[in-house]
Image 1 (spheres, one colour):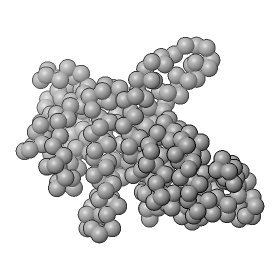
Image 2 (image 1 turned 45 degrees about the vertical axis):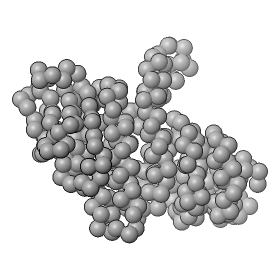
Image 3 (image 1 turned 90 degrees about the horizontal axis):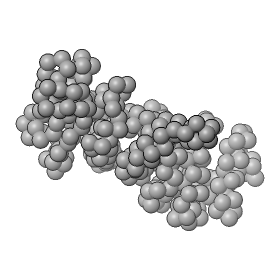
Image 4 (image 1 turned 45 degrees about the horizontal axis):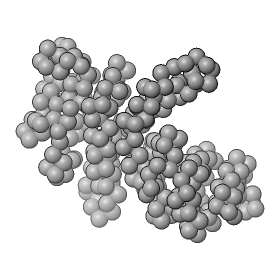
Length: 288
């Protein structure tokens, strides 16, 4: 389709109806086939055999920028068979790319690569958000169908949750991105984080590391928008109430407990009753 061709100038696009395939040079081991093709890809699929050791030096190169642009279009395209893309490796592919670009973005000692990685990483955040929104909508519809007694394909939702589960590995990377100076990075990162904890709770054991607890503490005291504070508190509440390890991490984090006390009614600092109530609820869960 034309939208793929526009976004991926380095990928060879065959005749209408055929598949996108064949990366140049050493990336030729990867094949992306989003549409049926007479050239051998009979269904929408993502087949990636990727040599990440080779990619590491070139993650910011033109080829990988084109790959990420293609993935963005695949996820955004309403006609994409997302479940099949998941089955063919989209989740792991995005996890690997996200991890590499996030590591560069968080590398304070390499400002040049940091700036270059930021734009690329924002595209990956969009991809991640699109994938999570899709998964969440399928699960929500299945739950609603169950509650209404109309049946619904719960197995499809369960399968999708299982296929998407590796994305929980990204929780511990999303939290350090929240303090980013770019408000859009905070917005999309927090939305991704919110959906992940809604779907999987505190599945990632490293989510509330001492560093991430400190990030939460700083954010809760620096953010002035009650809407942003509420989102952060809901994420934190879901994490600590679904995993005892995270609850213990909260109890051990003096700075985070102090931030919650500052927002709770006793501190008198919060003008928003919902923010104060959420902070108090988390403190009570921690035995304070």
